[in-house]
Structures are given as structure tokens and as C-alpha cells.
Image (cartoon, rainbow, N blue to C red; front, side, top):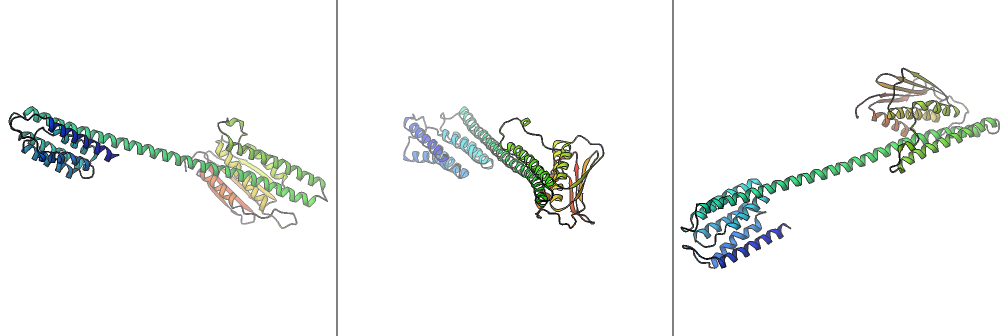
Length: 382
């Protein structure tokens, strides 16, 4: 595109120059045009084609041709091609190259006017020539600044768009991880309860039908609760513009009694101790506390028991949660096959890390397992 523009402007200048040479009326002291006149005309106009790649060399050729043209007193005066060259150099070249071209053009134009025959050029001719050259240089410089500013704005807009897309991708990834943690907590806990109850029901089916019936009832209730929770999470994924109020509220500390009753029905004797004045927790902290207790009790159902203790201690700055058990004694009681709990601990660590809290988990010296979490009530972004 740049070559097309430069070629079009150069062709137009050549046609204009040739027309002036053909129609110009000679004044006293001026020479008629010859073949050398057209050679000099080419020398003043053609450098416009190379001014982008070699501005100093192009200007040197054009200004040298102008000096020779003026010393030989050819007419008409070819200032317009020099003005266009000054404008184009200021527009396309760096300032450190455009300024020497501009100053050399002013000097060369002054010499060209000064060597004209008497009566052809006057002081007003000299002043107007320099003013036109200055205007051409300033307009080119101004347009170059505007182009640079537009390019910077476009680059910044592109950068902001890229950053926005990156933030959107990160948000999607974080949301997927959050939903994955929610699904893991719901499914792992419910499946653990179902597995324990089904194992116990199968064990006592022939000897204690009532116990087996209660186990089946617990399996049914747990399955329905898990399906309801999964529908709620899938509804969040499918929802587009629907009101959030239509969804069931996320569980919190107020739902712990129901969770403990469900765990007790699965065969785990669990006690809850709450200390301190219960402050108003934010929804994320409330949900995180509930999920940590749920995941810890799920792990105890799988690998520990038969007794567990849950301690929740509220203070002005944090919530302390501790879940521990005494370990499972050796007995003929059917147990769930041992599975890897790494994902549960990873999920808990991720949840706690969001709030800048601390989590410690490990075996207790006397047997059993302990999970302890410190959740700050107010914290900056981690």
C-alpha cells in the first residue's frame, strides 16, 4: 500500500512538472527547457519513491538536483516537489532523520531563490518558500505524532482485550475448580455414607431386618440429598441469566446438625462442640467451614471411627475448626475399601488457601487422625 501511494504521488508530480515545463512562459534571464531539464526534474521527483527506506540519501539527491536546476536558471520554479518530500520525510522518518532533511531543504531553497535572475524572485518569494517548507514539515510531524498515538491506543486496546480474555479464561478455570470441589465434596460424602450403610445392611440383613431397613432408608435419604445438591450445581452451569434466588442456598454452619445426623445414621458417633460468640460469617467462609467438616467426616467414615469430635472455636479474627477421631479398632465390622483421600485433602487446602488460612492434617500420636483449620474472617486477596 505504501508503494502504491508513493508511486501515485510521484507520477502526479512528474505530470505536473512536465506540464509546467511545457506551458511556462520564460522570464528574462531564464533558459528554455532541454532534455537535461527533464533529467533534473526526474532527479527532484523520483527520490520520493525511496524516502521511506533512505530519507537522507533521497533528500540529498533531490536537493542536489534542485541546486543544479536553479543555477542553470531553468523555469518554472520546482518548489512543490521539495515541499512534498519534506512533508513525506517528516511523516514517515524518525525525527533524528527528518530534522536534518528539513534544515537542508530550508538552506537549499534559500540558495535556489537567491541564485534566480533578477526580477524572477523577490524577498516575498523567499519568505513564502520558507513558510511553505516549514508548514510541510510541521504538518508531517503532527500527522506522524497522531499516527503514533493512534497506534499506541490500538496496541493498548489490543492488550486490554487480551488481558480481559485471559481474566475470563482464569475465571472459567477457577469456577470449574470450585465446582469440581463442590461435586467432590457432595459425591464423596454421600457415596461414603451409602457404602457404609449398604455394607452394614448386607451384614445384618438376615439377623436384624429392622437395622437393614433403617440402613436402606438412610441410603435413600442420602441419595436424594446428593441428587438435589448435584442438580443445584449443574443448574449453576446451565443457567444463563436466570435469577440466583431460584437456586437452593449453599450450606453453612447452620446445616451442621443435619450433616451430623446423617453421619450418625451411617454409624459414626460424632459430637459437636462450639466455643466463642458466633459472628456473622460471609457466605464463602460459611460454606468453606461446612465443606471442611463434611470432607473430614467423610474421610473418617472411610478410614476411621467409630467416634469423632468436631470443635468449632469462634474468635474476633478467625474461625478454628478441628475434626479428629480415635481410630478404627480391629473388629469384624464391615468396612469400606480404603481409597485414596488425596483429592479431599487437596480440595480442603485449596479452599483454605483462598482465604489465606492454614490447614494441618495428620495422624494423632495415640491413634486416629486430626484435621485443623484456621480461617481468617477478614483477609486481603492471597
